[in-house]
Length: 82
Image (cartoon, rainbow, N blue to C red; front, side):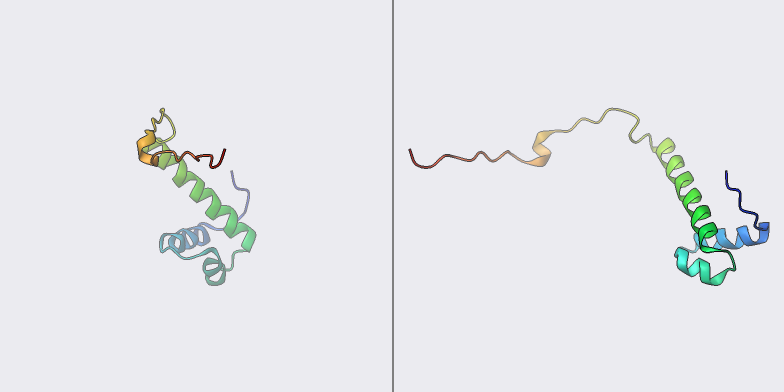
């Protein structure tokens, strides 16, 4: 999946900083990992979290029924004049 060669210690450190909700820039400054590698790993983690969320919640898997009452009535423009 990811071809960067970083140690398990650096990877654990990056995941710890991610779990503490630090931004990519903050993670970059606290570690000695390059910006491309940090972005690549964090993007992969975020995509995996999204996949797991969609699988568990069942969102976007079934049909969605929308009631027009939710959106309100349509306003019809009257023609004035003639």
